[in-house]
Amino acid sequence: MGHERDREFTTTLARGIDILACFRADRPVLANKDFAQQTGLSRSAVARLTHTLVELGFLQREGEPARYRLGASVLALSYPLLASMQIRQMARPLMKQLADHARGAVSLVVRDRLQMVYVETARSNEALQTRPDIGASLPLLSSAAGKAWLARAPDEERAAVLNQLRIADPAHYEAHFPTLAAARRDLERKGYCGNNQQWRPDAYGFAAPLGRPHQSLLYVFNCGVPASDGPYRERAADIGPRLVALARETERLLGYS
Image 1 (cartoon, helix red, strand yellow):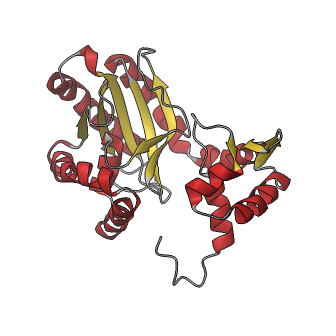
Image 2 (cartoon, rainbow, N blue to C red):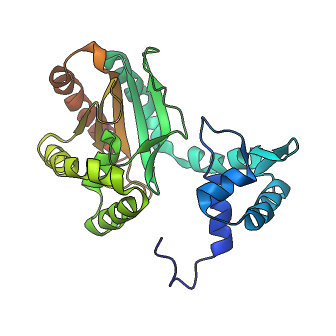
């Protein structure tokens, strides 16, 4: 998106990464035809890319006709990033404390292209339909965490991401973009954004971002709780301020205040 005039942009590398990005938790095994459908690339181009990724250990090939799983090299590549995020270790005890109080899950997330990705999580309720884990993703426009990121991000970066979202999924954009203005007001007044069953009908979501990026990433704390545990307004009044306090305490531990 928008790379056509960038002479430094390597298209072949980008296509290989797009192949790896096709996998999801509910789609752990894919064939070349699946990659072609999802990326828009030709079957021959996909075949060359998957062959290369197998040789490098980023994909595992199995069966005939060939199907692919992610390889161990993907995991090894992600370890240095996760290990360098000291904020995870700092915030983990605070997150578990809030998760126990809220009877839900408290997570730390960052943006990855057009989604939010979990980098740490603490859970205290096995009744949650969604069980967040490191590497799992959230939608940007329909989740509390995504709205919090969009509300706090610099104007130019937010505008670019919103334009990409509009192009990638016009229907989803039209359905959820109008809620962003209220999220920005809530963040300014309360310090957190809420999500009243807009992403999932069985859950409420609350999110509070750090005041500024840390190591070039804008981190967001997210708390998900079952909608069956009580009215949204009561849960927001209890969890929202505690989530903001968690974010401010993390900033203090990072030396921001």
